[in-house]
Length: 141
Image 1: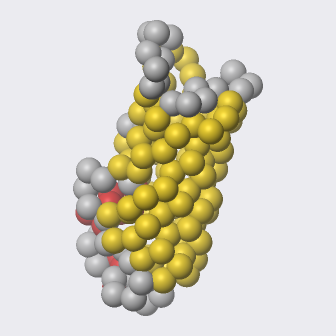
Image 2: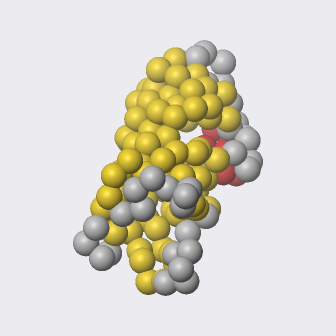
């Protein structure tokens, strides 16, 4: 399970597309490997940019993961970001544990907008998004 908090600077708004810096933190718990192993947990940081609005944009994001077994992973995501429920960001593990795996990361922006549909219309725009969902690592052979 992935739990993330993202910060946007400047805030994402509903109407005016713009370049927005993203920083954030999160954790992974209850991890299971394809071989059935369990017990992995992790903390991570997120950094990147989104060009667009709350509802539609293009995102570039890096996730730096530190696993509880002492290993690390660097995951990069890029592509469309859509503020609707069910949207995921798809990336690749560039280095470290699970290198080469595809990764699907829940879009916490969608979770935030579902809970507060007018968040992007606030003065200064949406400055923070939080959410939880399944982050999936898939080996491509």
